[in-house]
Length: 246
Image (cartoon, rainbow, N blue to C red; front, side, top):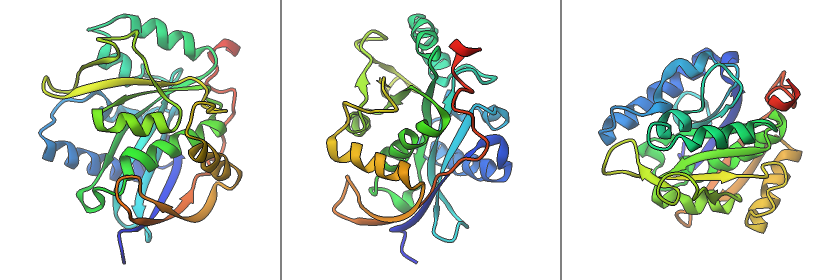
């Protein structure tokens, strides 16, 4: 089977512990190969947090995990990884997150992909897109993320902007002193008015049909990727993470 045919699922972490463990194992291996030993989003306590929603990328048969990401909501039983990662350098992050949490906010974190699918945009682009897609089901109005320099353009494609009020114009070194991270924020995760028009339409189309098969074009290479989307999340209240209502 070609790796260009994949499946992307979304689920609440506490609903599928076995898939969480497979996600953790794959992510840990990628970090180990990259020489990264300490990263806040790699803390495994998230799998017990009902405010975590997992985006898992698998081969078509579902027997190999190829990558993924998490959407961690503010208001669960943990601070956002971005608060833990940047708080000791710039305490303003706490105020910013608290402000957006009133209407429901989350962080897209833990993005990764295996070498098997390197260059297809699995972690950098398709998992990012799906994070925005499922924001509608969860009721999240905004999304934070930490990006490597080469992935900022993919975040901007879905409507994010660099959060220049934090760190050094939105950047700081993380998780190692030789790795630069950029803080981005999607302020309107429901309407994504600043997204690339074609990407905005694609996100809206997937939201209308959360379980579909579609042939996408990788933004990194001129390669078609056949994606089986399975993004319906059971038992979610759109007001669950709106702190202003609690």
